[in-house]
Image 1 (cartoon, rainbow, N blue to C red):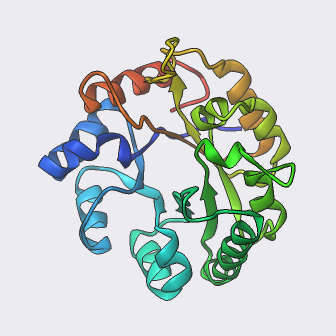
Image 2: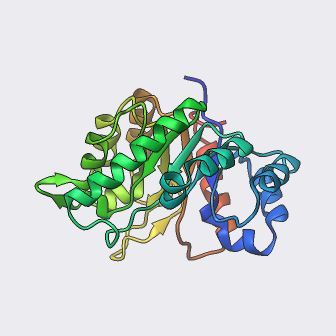
Length: 252
């Protein structure tokens, strides 16, 4: 496998984007990022694409809310197409939104139907989990319920290493379980503290040699840096993660 290009989920730097999107994009390029997963921007897709291009960046994916993906699928697809992305991901379904297996299954079937339309336009729809998807309903992990009640061609996994660990699941085992169905991987580290705080990649407790080996073997197409919160400036956190990953042979 050739090296993965370095990509960042923009939620990481949402505070900086709110102040100066253009300057933030330029700073990310200077750090070595070449692609982003779009989120946290209240702007037209065409304007986002233009700003990214001017900074020497491209979009590889976008997070699009469930309500838009399933309730206004045509608009969601148009947004993704304007950004020229190959992947779109539902970023969140809260535990308060889906209480009980039947509700999770209904939401999954709606995503599966939308995924058919995305696939027709050459875009892969994914689901991005947090920690609560590793709670159990009727003995099964919610995340497995989502995957089991959708077709792999219509709904893929965007596995998040931190949230898997937080939910009590080995990220390597989860990647292996969904090999061939996990084109996107959020690489996110966990601090060695009681709060299980977010950490810059390579500065926490997760085992990146094993995780990245599993990702290669599972056919992961994009490893996307994300850090939900930071004890330092978000751009500094993004820089530290980039510095660590660009020191590894798996990234370019």
